[in-house]
Image (cartoon, rainbow, N blue to C red; front, side, top):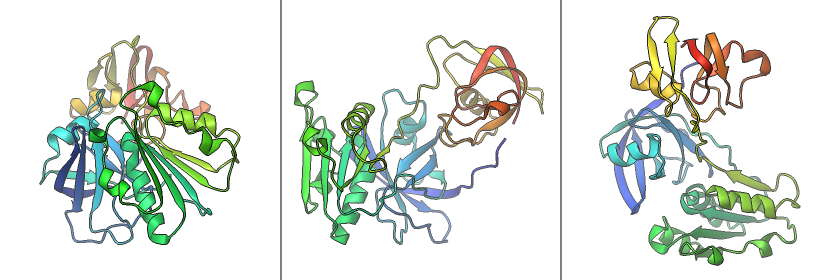
Amino acid sequence: MSETLETRAFTVTSRTTLTDGIVEFTLSPVDDAPLTPFTPGAHVTVRTPSGAMRRYSLVNDGRAPESYVIAVKREPASRGGSTSMHDDAQEGTQLDLTAPENEFELVSAPRYLLIAGGIGITPIQAMARHLAAEGTPFELIYCTRTAAETAYLDTVTALPGNVTVHHDEGDEDNFYDFWDHFEKPTNAHVYCCGPAPLMEEIKALSGHWPEGSVHFEDFKPVDVVRADDQAFTVTLADSGRSIQVPADKTILEALREAGEKTVSSCESGTCGTCKCRLIEGEADHRDMVLMDDEKDSHIMICISRARSGDLVIEL
């Protein structure tokens, strides 16, 4: 298996209910060492109480942080991450976090168009506050279903500049019309974070914009199990232990529930953290990491399965 993720112990020092489905967590380090600074758009990977690793955007100022602040939406189809954060991450709960990373970095531009949908406001509002403090021109469009479901509403509406908060009330005919913002390319850079339909709409509308001027952040998990998946058995080469992998769980989840020590990060087949040796069996590779010449000898256990029969792997 790849090298173990470097994590650090944090304690939930406060949790605040932002909406019925969104909770903000303040996470403070257990030790006294200074925290790694971060820039707007950064995220941390959290080992949730269920053991699942999940990425969450940081919402606080990252210049000299004394804590990391994240907001978590309870996902209806949660596979253990958001549900365990809401149910089990109480004040005093200890969680392991990786250092901040930023794959959604603000690049230098004359002005910015920031677009958020729902929980996608977490990195976007951090960017907006940063730009406001610098005096850099920006426009912010924040789309939600209702005011009651709008996290950080007071923070967003208090921002200087051109800020639009749009509630569609769940009516497709009332969805925000972005066309006027994209009809003619400008010198602005666009940052968008939100649910898949919003992201797809912005991608479609901005296809004629200069390459690299429109940026997206999406932590939405992929469908790691499918309707036609079958149960199979994984045998661990080192110990000889055999573990049943149900049709509705991944190898990683089955091993975790069986008490086996595993490492993971994205849990969507994109990072390579959970790569294991494939000793025997034919894998159904669903990741986006392995090279063709690796597929006979390795498997990403967060997403890939047995194509037929059982597997033998080495952790």
